[in-house]
Image 1: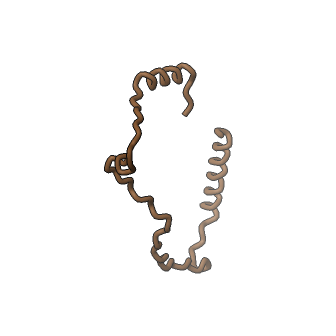
Image 2: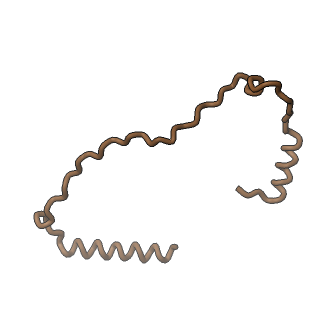
Image 3: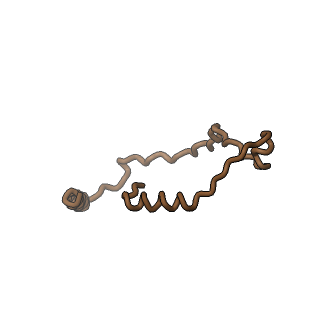
Length: 90
């Protein structure tokens, strides 16, 4: 995020008016924590992933019905129109 100069000045002025920070010396470590225990760091070990199920094999392409040439030509023309349209826009 980038702030323009005017917004940066307003933010700085607000922070100067509203910041509430104070420092004090603690006698021992227990006083420093205030009774708060930070959460444990997350484990870097990757969980065990499930086994990949068996995937069905593709049918023999020679057994697949043939797409009529007119349908294939229509699909190619439509794809060409779409890519031409995209190239004009971007």
